Length: 341
Image 1 (spheres, helix red, strand yellow):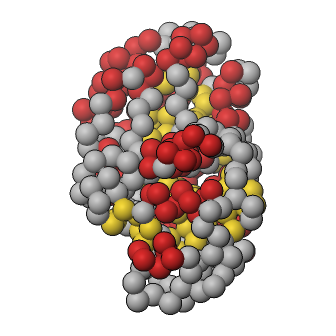
Image 2 (tube, rainbow, N blue to C red):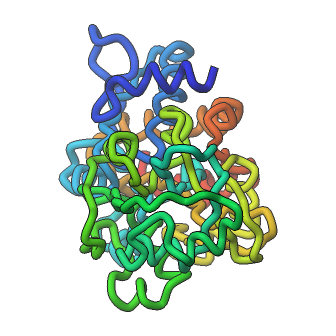
């Protein structure tokens, strides 16, 4: 069922109206491609139950921030959280909506998904271009007994401003001083590998990794599943090799202190815990405290309120991690209360 649904939404990932095309969408949002499969599934069920539609443009986190600041949508979505200072300047609030994971994906014949292992520092060297062949001694040492090919590595990255890139480069900065010093983290960075290619959105990166032999890239886990992609196991902060799924994402989020940072914009990369996936992240929603269209803003809150209460099973179906009830209760009381009705 998971795969069937994802195939159905894959046709129009760049921009969709969930609901009948004959009716204008009641809610407008734009931004991160990371949570798009989840928002599409929630919106489809919500439309059937309430008659209220959602038009969500899956254009990347930077695009979502631009659109909400331009007030062309009622909510923006970003995986790269906006700072507390910028939220105050813009008169906005921010809250997490869903938790998932970013995964290193590869195109390498002869290996099953998760069969090959990599550490954070070695992965950083691959993205730096310092490790340029799959049979490099450092990769071979991590995968004894594996017949790694003498094949060039092509790095596939996002070509647009991306929260997925922000979290990926946040992770690489955490595990590699050289990456932190020479590239750093951001929604858009200068990719140093000599052999590299960009793709728009998670879907664009997935398509390019699937197309280019020897490629390595990074996408949200729902896109791994949708495209039946090969992936690398990652060594986490506790030294354990783990595979991506909802359990390892949840393990990374277990110790999160959401209100320790203004706007709840915490980082979960390289979280401690034997079962933690090292590149787990939340996707965030941006809304105005004093919205121009208060009725539309109220409809957005109704949608997410419904999703928090009724969408947990749908999230699990797609291997996202729903927020716990205790956290959504705090979001309602501490964050949504700031939005004028």
